[in-house]
Image 1: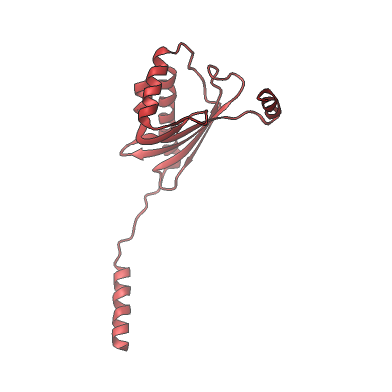
Image 2: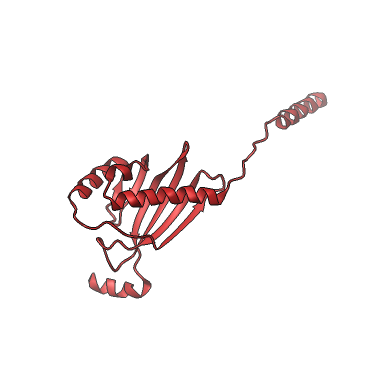
Length: 166
């Protein structure tokens, strides 16, 4: 019985020792942040030009996209229909600039969180918006797989907003 136990233990040790070592390539976080910045700038530029097709090309097929209203939960098809209709008929100026962008890259360099803050004057000139996006590397390209847009009033304005909504 002891011989069988020792043999089983030896077999387990050999099997475990023969497993290939996974070599993780070091990730150049600054280079990855540069690639993601390019992606987010492309999305911003396409949105400002009201180019629905260029905007949508940067989104994953299975993505989830949330607007500022609690009812706005979109898949890519629904967002596509809305963008195309809205951008074709709206005469508003869609230009805005990002006041703050923070990019947090995953350790493997294949995904990241992107947080942007800005004011979209055609929606609300007084209440800033914060966008939180999850971007993923698909092949050699970066794409947006999730985004959430939310109004972020300043703390000193909360009471005023509450009173206005009474």
